[in-house]
Image (tube, rainbow, N blue to C red; front, side, top):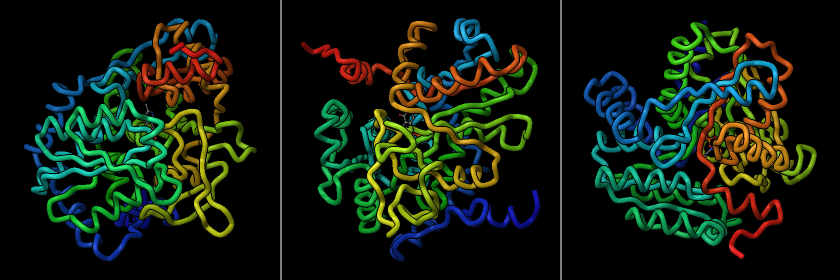
Length: 403
Ligand SMILES: *Cc1c(COP(=O)(O)O)cnc(C)c1O
């Protein structure tokens, strides 16, 4: 790595200038404090012990690296391993990140956690860790989303969180992020914003990556034990990009490992009903960062769409924008239809009901594995479990299971 890329990294920049801190003046000092504390905690043995203790003894890590024998045989090409983040407590990778950020908040002396949520998954994860650590928790969720995801609203309340329905803008995820940033700017003395993905102003993308890197730390070691080599390809689905950047992190410096991020193409990359940001987006500034966004020619953020609530974010984390720009990682789109087919496929092949987000990555595996050699290896991150999706997939297939 040359000096200039080191420098850009240090200032929270990636590639040709993605990332940064585009936020109100009132938050600058607070973000500086967070950055300083985070840098200190990375070398604080007590913090690291506490983090890994919660990962192992609360979240159920390490997660399995599971050899998907049936899929491998059926697809007839590369050997497929699944990194089972679906087996974590609360059923997805999100717990890794919220444990890390809640501990940073604790070490900063904060007593109150706030977070945005779209479908409710990140809100539930944040409420979970707040309950465990005895912190107060308030979640901001678009009014549209609170109506669509009543079960998750109830879950958060059950865990002791207060849920605010955000009525500004189009009342969806992007508006919830704005509302949470505003709340933080107006009250940061006792409050920490637990960011839901590898997005937002520095140091959030770096911090989220750090906490999610446990995925690839483990997978690299587990594959070494099982196969004594590196994988040829690592595949993960991408919303804001936290599970993907954690899945990629420990392989970025291994050029022989191909990295593939799978975005939600919705009804198709060429339609307006899509969330494939790398393919369809353009460079802009939103939610405190410079990155790629779905936007119109005036820079207004466009609505995005996917069957999968966890993937319909109109942007992508700045490091992914840089990895795409440098051609270090490839980003591909998978449609609703393809991911629903994969949802059924992995259930029947492997006896695993996987999150519809993760099934975008599985659908890509179905396409690419047969084209690879039998001695090649793919690791695919199963970001979450699919219990939450069963009713809506049934409906998509024309079955009303509540009849
Ligand atoms: C939230 C979520 C995602 C997408 O978020 P990333 O930050 O891109 O990882 C993917 N899968 C599951 C199961 C999720 O809950």
